[in-house]
Image 1: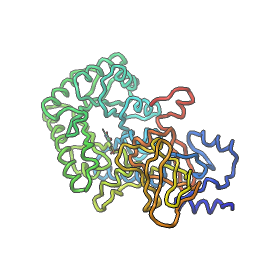
Image 2: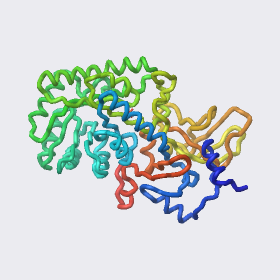
Image 3: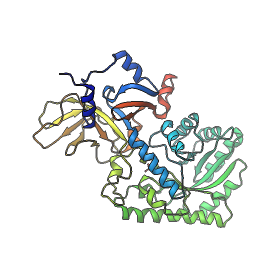
Image 4: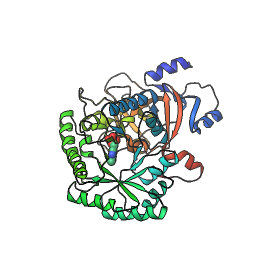
Length: 415
Ligand SMILES: Cc1ncc(COP(=O)(O)O)c(C=O)c1O
């Protein structure tokens, strides 16, 4: 029996797509469409090889607009973090809605953003390798606005030398440790001394401070999260105030995460929001609870992994083609199914996952396709080269993660 395209659309709405649906073009044409970088026409979600990383554009655009509106109405700038998606196309859309630039976690990400024409790049991670400081200084040649975070005097001297050699100037934020003990310097006399050191450099311009509290972002329960984050961020706010009183430049306090965006915005001293995951969302964030709800649903689940049922020989379970290599495994739970309740997912190796259920009726057949919500969005995206940006059951654009698609064509693959 052949299923019409209309029926396919309905099946897609129900979260089920059969791999055997007829398509309007041949295999060669499909291969060509799949090689596209950018806008693509006539490519259906149903024709994508699985596992595939999808971004629902309707939900994504709502997420972007909601955060942009939140920032503007709370008098904050938005410098969203690109570590979530590593994709220039996402940043372009954030900038179109008023973002002042982008945060990155690695020098490679900074280079991808700069190559994509993005300005206002903040490398939010400290580094300790001269070749990396040289690359950051190189990005600032010609006047690009590049800011780096430091938590040690050695980094100040590395950036100073690199910028002098490159003939560029770098903005600097002092990275404060407000409780994570991951990176950053204690917000006390030591931070003031480090800031004074930066002001002595001809190549470096002190712009203020940065504080990230990863320990706050996933605290379950809004009230508990609020307490945790306000305590952490009040230390950063006090430090910015000390900078000001000491006559040190402190125009920026860059901070916060998706889980604390509507908490930290209460703090007047915070000037810009470094939120990342809100564009995509994941199971991890869903569990933390929102201001008015047991689940955190302020932002929609735009990101999914499309998978196919590849083995269906048992009454109460099937196997899909999405395992360790398709979904990040750093959390103690697996993915949720986007459109089905009461189905359990279990990792079953590199290429496979098993779906099981208790009911007598069988929800899936061989060849059925379904979408999974990633346990953790950032490391899941990092497993893919391309994001299929979809509107309902059609692929509208294909975006390159870390510019790997064009890089691959040149035989070069940044990680
Ligand atoms: C320094 C820094 N800032 C901001 C973020 C963004 O957090 P989220 O993705 O939870 O919004 C992260 C995420 O790990 C981070 O490491």
